[in-house]
Length: 106
Image (tube, rainbow, N blue to C red; front, top):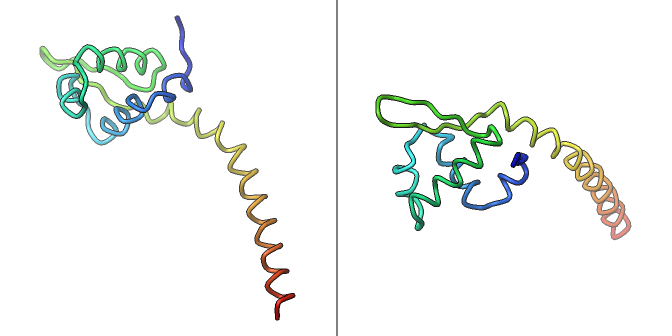
């Protein structure tokens, strides 16, 4: 089953894993040490993140290291940008209302 990025980031554990490996590549065992869960559970999360191309695997000797694919995060940013523009417009409108109210008080 092909998942999309938004399904991947919907889970708080997967978001935490992404934050963790954004700093440096890690093995599944090292990642699992940072959570109160099993190694198998972390592996499942990593598989989903890999399917969505948010993380990449790199074999180094006998170990597999996972790292964040920053470029793939652009897809999330593009989607969020439409809301960012909406929020900015609303905040600007609120600033105008507050400014008008402040002037009327004086």
